[in-house]
Amino acid sequence: MIAPTAFCAAGAGEWQIETIRSILGPTLPAAGFLKITDGDAGKNEQSNLWTLRGTAGHARYVTRSETNQLLERQEALGRKGATCAALIPIRKSETWWTLAQDERRSIMEEKSRHFGIGMDYLPAVARKLYHSRDLGEPFDFLTWFEFSPDSASAFEELLGRLRATEEWQYVEREVEIRLTRTMIPQSTADR
Image 1: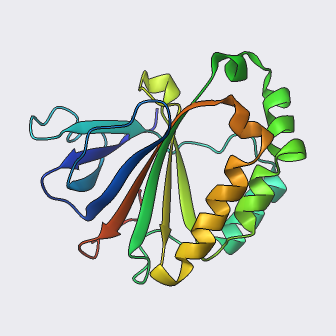
Image 2 (image 1 turned 90 degrees about the vertical axis):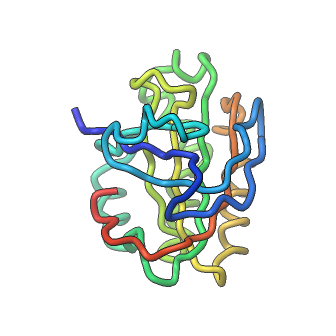
């Protein structure tokens, strides 16, 4: 199993938390900073207000062709000019999870165009998806986005388009955490 990544609300960290707001369902407690650690490091630190974990294992719901397109167009996380970020934890309904894999894929791609919408904003908005459901976490997915201040309006447009799709009818909890980089990371290749 791939080691999880931990997103820890703490008193210091690489990212300053600007806002935490509920889009749907309960929010998370206010915090000042977010630190991102590999594995379970930070999970049990008493100073963390909350910790969300997810694994960035193999991509689900995408075809080989789509995977190749992503690899060609998406730039790496940790780009020098990408000083803005958003962590968006999402939990979908049990109705979503009772659908077969091909039914979920149909809703995501044929009806909602999830992949196509995301591709429209590359390379300006880099993203990485973490799976949390199988870890027993309170969210099913943690989506991490990084972008430059000049791409902030494109990011807003991306969110608006995704939230207007049929797929979002299955979301029962969504929290939006906006962040600003406080320091240049040493290495984000494994994140």
